[in-house]
Length: 358
Image 1: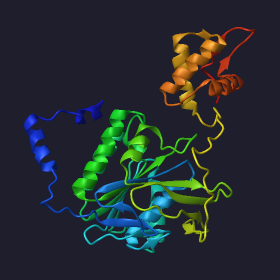
Image 2: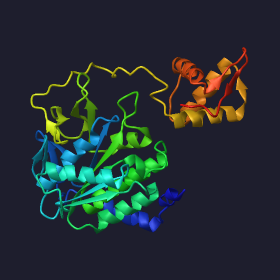
Image 3: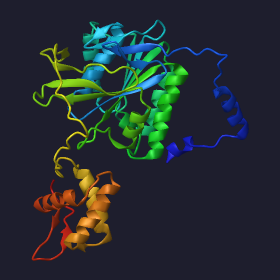
């Protein structure tokens, strides 16, 4: 694929130049990265670094990031976010990879209203790109050109970093896009904030790219629905290099804007690993994943006995990023039978029904 072209060797001469340029010296002074985003006095974003928001679907991640952008446009406070951008770093680039231009415009208007700015005309400090129709490769090139050719840029939002790669579980692609974030932020001395979904069954960011984000990001914010009130979303630091901050929460008010909930207290987390949500093969696995895995299994053999089917399903689903074991394979097979995605008639072996209705 084209993205592999980026992984090329450099000559020995080039390596020597980069080696010398990378050496630190106590005889030189190095400036501290300017702090541009804070929560409760805790630094969550500096120039030359990147951060991320993660959360499950419908947790209102985009509303939360809208507050960050609005704070940057005001150069003030929105919700609990405080922005302090210097002159020459006031412009914000917002990149949306998922939504249509119509829905992107709604987000843009919301940001301007939150920043107490007119929402009936463009703002010189906000550039909004709707990149849904492009390929991952095209999106990377478009964003790169925008970053390097936008004067006074200070903050970049990438709403949908997953759509900057073809395969979310590809180590090569994940390393490439994270390297791009580090290159862009360092070259342009900007801050980039990205958005990524969580896994359905745990608190980890999705795929190999999620692992890379957790390892390299300055801050990872967790946006999640309140367990006792689904209308409330809380924001906490899942990972932060600076001092941690007290979680806060917001709800969407009658004007369709996020509104801070004063005095909100989060439910204390139990020590150790979070309790895993009960596995549901219908909700936790998409129809497309089911189809890919089943076609792979039954492409090898037309029929299976129960035990060999279980083993084949575990291997096939794991290959597409759905980790299974015996305990999860049992309810999976039950669901596949109930949905008549596989059938076992008259005591015969299991066969695949490719025309199933999900």
